[in-house]
Structure formats: C-alpha cells, structure tokens
Image (cartoon, rainbow, N blue to C red):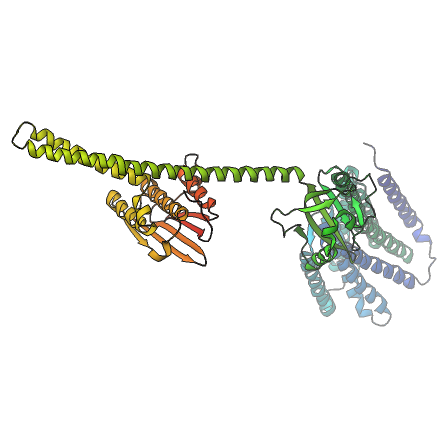
Amino acid sequence: MKLPSDLRLARRFAALLAVGLALTMAVNPYLHLISDPLPWRFLIELVCVVLYFSVFIVSWNAYEIHRKSRSVILALGFLCVAIFNFFHLAGTFSLISSPGYQQTTLLFTLLWKLTAALILLLVGFEKKSGELSRLQSGWLLELALTIVAALSFLVFFYFDQIPPLNHSGSWPFQLKSTIEVILIGLMLMASGLFYRQAKTLSQVDERKEQTWLFLASFILAMSEFCDLRNNNDLLGITGQLFQFIAALCVYLSIVTVSLRAPFLQLAQARKEISKNRTRLNGIIQTASDGIITINAAHIVILVNPAAETYFGYEPGQMLGLNLDLLIPKNHRGGHAQHVDQFGKTGVSIRQMGMQYPDFSVNGLKKNGEQFPIEASISSLLEDGERFYTVIFRDISDRKIAKQKLEQYHRELSNLSHSLQTVREEERKHIARELHDDLGQLLAALRMDLSLLEKRQSDNIKTQPIISSMDKLLLNSISTLRRIASDLRPRALDEGGLYFALLTLQKEFIQRHQIACELNAVETELILNDGLSTTIFRVIQESLTNVVRHAHATQVWITLSQTDGKLSFSIQDNGKGIAEQDFVKHQSFGLVGMRERVRALQGELTITGNEHGTCIEVALPITSEAPQP
C-alpha cells in the first residue's frame, strides 16, 4: 500500500533527525563548542513551556459547546506537562543560588516526561474520538489541576526525604535510569501507534494529526535518549532542541484539528446554507400557492411564479411594487397599519381575513379584476428590519362551490320544512277524519248495537254474539283514538302545548312504565302552531329514542323562556348516546329533529356519557313559524 505523502515526509524527517543524533554522539567526545550552555538551554525550555501552554489554550478554546475527547486529553495532558516543565525550569534557573533545588528539578523532569509519554500513549490507544460537553471538560480540568497541585506539593515539601537521584551507582540513580529507559520505550510505542493509524486513515485532517503526533513521540524518545547519555553540554543541548521540535510537532497536531475544525465546520455550514437556499428557492418557485415577501415599507422583494400568475403579471414585474397595488381600493384604508400592528404583536404567523366568516380576503389583478384568496401572513425580524411573507391561494372555484352548496342546503332545508308542514297537515286532516267521521260512525254503530241487544235480550243464542261485537267495536274505537292521537294529538289543537305535553307524559308513563317528570310553566308555552308542533314533535321523538335505545328508568323534561328564547331539554339516566350513533345512516329521528329545529333558526345540541343522554334545544320565539 502506498504511503501518503505527508507520512513519507514525516518518516524521512524522523530518519534525518536520527542520523543527526548519531553524528552528534559520534563527535560528542571531541567537541566542546559551548562554554556556558545554561542560558541557551533555559531559553529553549522556556519556548517549550510556552508551546505546551499554547497547546492547551488552542485546543481548549477551539470548540464552543462540545469538544473532542482526543483534544481534551491532549490539552489537559500538555497543560500538566507545561506546569511540571515550568517548575523544572524554575529549579534549573535557581541552581545558581540554591543547589538544593537540583533534586526538585530532576523530580519535575521525570514528572513532565512521564506525563507526556502516558498522554501520547493514551491518545494513541484511543481508536475513536468522542465528544465531551463543556461541563465534563470542566470536571476533567479541575481533576487534572488537583493532581498537579498535589504532586507539586509533595515534590516541593518532601524532596529532601528522597535519596539523591544524581549520584552515579546508587539505587535511586539506577531507578531513575530505568524509568528513563521505560520512557523511551513508551514514546516509541506511541510513535508506532500513531504511525500505524496515519497509514490507515483516509481523512486528511485526522491523518495529519496522527502524523504530527508520530513525529512528536519519536523525537521525544530521541530527546530522552540524549538525556540518558548526557555526559557533556553538546548532547544536552541536542536533547533540548529535540524537545523543542517535539513540542512544535504537538502544537502543529493540535492546530491541524482544533484550529481547522471551526473553519471546516464554517465551510460545511456554508455548503449546507447554500444547499438549503437552493432547495428553498426550488420549493418557492415550484409551489402551487402564491408567495410574496415585503419589507417594512410594504415593497415586494420576493415573489414566486404562482403569485405572478394569480395576479396576472409577467415574470419579474411584481418586484418593487407596493403591496397596495395588489389590494382593492376599498380595502386599502388602514391595511398598512394592520400589517405593522401585526408585526408588533410578536406573533410569528396568523390567518388573514379573521374578521370574515370564511377567512378570505380579496386580491386585485393587474387588469383590475378582484378575486378571493385564502392567505396567511408571517413576520420575521432580520438585522433589525421587519419582513412579512404572505402565502395565499385563489379560492374562486371553492367559493362558487360553497355558494352552490349553501344554496342547495337552503333549498333542501326549505323542502324538508315544507314536507314536514305538509306531513303535519295531512296528519291533522287524517286524525280529524278518523276522529270526527269514522269515530262517530263507530260510536253510532255501537249505539245501534246496544238497542239491538235490548230488543234481543230474551234471545239467548244472539246475546253472546252481540256482546262480542260490542267489545270489538269498543276496541276499534280505542285503537282509532290512539292512531288519531299519534297522527296529531288532539290536545295540541284543543288545549295547547302545555296540555299536549301533560297528555304525552301521562301516556308515556302508562305505556312504558318509565318515570317522567315535566317542569314547565303553562303561561310560557302559549305559542303559535309552528313552534308548538316543533317542540312537541322533538320531545315525542326524544321519548321514543329513550324507549328504544337508552334503557333508562327516569326522564326529565324541562322548558323555560328567557331573553326571547324558549329553551327545553330532555335528560335521561340511561346508558348514554355513543359517538358512532350520530353518524348512523338509519338515524332519521335525529335528522328529523335537527331539521325541524334548524327550520326555525334554532340550535339543537346532543350530549351523552355514562350517566345518560341530554338533548338541549333553543328556539327564538320571536320568529314567525309557518303555519301548518
């Protein structure tokens, strides 16, 4: 597999440094070019401390809300390295006046190198970088600073209790040398991990990060080797230079990802904005609804082809027009103030034409023709300037269809009312004929039969026949009266609505054995024939439904008159009407009641629950009901 170019360059650079280290070690015994290397070493280490602090600052501030776990580990790790290295630098500088700090210098040297090795190894083993929130990052920062403070306290206050580490041949010196060898191994292991990851990564930024970290780990290992073999100043300065190069590589690895990441996100966001703008423009241009956007001065700044077609303009002609040119003259007064007031309410979107029953407004075409539209308006504040967008559609066909439907409905309602009136008239006529003519004939026939029974009183054979005929005539008369009463209650014509309801209540209780309570004032029920008939039929049909469906044991009928309206209700304690019962195709009784009430401009409401069903009706008693 061919290596990426940047990884090949990094490998060559590492090999070049290794060769340079070998040459330095070869000539090291023969060269003594620097008489006083301490200022140079101090300057190099100071630059390294600055770079390590920069690694923390850059990585920590690169992300606003979420941070990559790899960046957080590197940032906190090299913050600890910078602090330990600073203490090491301070100890080295203080050797001029206080040689006792040499022990602390060696301890801090081991601490920062061990921290750097562990951090690089930890990052190398992390296969996938997750995300950490700001709160989680803050906890990790506090934990890292706590550990650094604790270790620094132990080193500063207990360094004299640790055996000297710089006495050749002592066991502390051997332990120090062993730790340095382990550090070389850890750093070489980390460099191997980063090198292997850089070979397999396809994303350029991630590969560059691993490449820089590979170089940093490898160069730190060589720097540690220089310190391990440090027997003169030249090799020590070489190790310091390697530390500087390693710090620079770590800094560049952070810059590769942490600094470039926001710019990459910005570029990605710009692409998304461009893509969304193209998509939104396509939606606007192909939408079947008209879309118009105006500014605070009510000048059209955006319009789609559908809107131009609706208003009869050529493409591009509506841009720059004042919105008033699209509104009929009789509607322009105060329209600008209404729009501005809507923008001040803080409501983002609202249906237009809320003052009209059908929520429609009129638009004005280029040729002066008006047409109805259904529209909604939305408000948006952008950079201190208010913009309004209107989305609308032409509802001319819908309005015509609605007018035709309303006309058909009125005609059907009038037809239904006419049929009900004719039906009541026929019922009244048939009931009168049955009661007055056929009923009288049956009564006369029974009287004649009574006379015949008296004359044939001594005829034992004919007596049973005459008695049976009398019973049949009596049953016929009762059946005739019941049929006539069902067709048209005589009490409604003779005694009025109150008397007819009392009769209906009595017959309902006798016939069905269901308690029925009537609450009404007779003087409030003196009404014209149309109202009386409607109220009686609605109550009669309601009681029939109670018997058929409710399974109730109690019914309450209440009538009252207030504010020019007669209100009545029929309440039962049955099982209650279900929602699906309202849409049954066989519910002609409910439809008949509703049509009767609607014909008199009344309102009918039916509610039901587990406690029963309630039918409430409100009728204007000032309206003139047609007389049957």
